[in-house]
Image 1 (cartoon, rainbow, N blue to C red):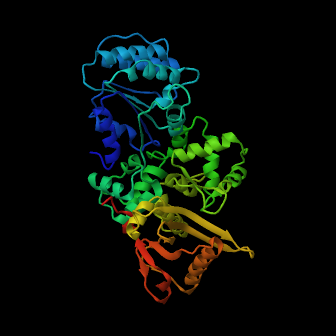
Image 2 (tube, rainbow, N blue to C red; image 1 turned 120 degrees about the horizontal axis):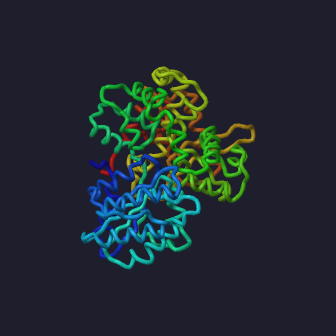
Image 3 (cartoon, rainbow, N blue to C red; image 1 turned 180 degrees about the vertical axis):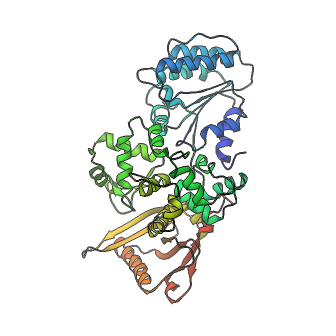
Length: 472
């Protein structure tokens, strides 16, 4: 049963109901559920369904394609001599199908595009020269290498330019969707445990499938991550290798970003990752952004070249903190999660989850329909100090929410020193930006605030439960 994905499923079904042929591209990072969505939506009823092979050359790709042709064509096909020949044979299979709308699903498309194979050119010829002229075909393509799909299919300047009729990005689950997913699988973890799991793995459905009934969160994390035989013990290397053909340069970028909470400018990042500041570096940043690993934002009032890049992938952040270059034991997380290092990490990870749920935060504040610009903000003072704000929501109704996120096991207590720090942040933002908007100090905590004389400076309170809100 599908959790969420209603809009994405609706668009797929619209393509099938269309009176013309449709070219649909579904894209998103590894393990996010692209194949599952497509198979569930069409109930596995395909005119043709083929999956490319990882790390296989052209000859092996064509041999496997021939096997799929035989499966759906109900006859013995020869091995195609090239991809043009392969798509000609596919045309025969489609033409023989008597369905009103023939759904052709090509999964892991980037893997089929091996060096000098001519795959993209052949795909162009198949669609432009034959399929698009009909009114009964739905061609659905997808692949985990998001940047390949975007660059070679969606943003192609050749024969596939503007040929895709529906673009369907598939994003990770929200906390609400993950809670529904866990409940559907019979998992009875409390919300704070679900939140901690999300802080480690984000909203990737495959990672949530690894939770087993009857085990604690710490047991689950230790089993799948820190055990050498664990399902996700090697996930970091597999993840980046599946997305990028030469992953080392991309890993060096996220490694550099992993050391800086609020992010870096392009110039700072090139220096920190020891890469040349050129067009190829910009392409890598764009590809990481397209895959959802980093986000780029520009602080209003600052020039575009000062745009900030921030690492957003939960699992990558966790890996660098607790797994990279370390010898770990099978009960690692059960021990580390209770340590001071673990508590500090929880605070930083909670901030990241809040940034991934800005729409839920807006709903809880009551500004869901108000035009809003969201970004992190920092300023340096002459004495070497300064102010840093986790999240600023600049609203179209002339108000600004200055948001601070704090993760504790109980109510968060604002003392005299922290009240002074909060007021200094608000004053610094007012002074540096020169805004005349109303500034509303907003606290987002796991369990709420302990109300005392120092908490009076807070204008709006949100708790972790607000991040679990659905679309209602």
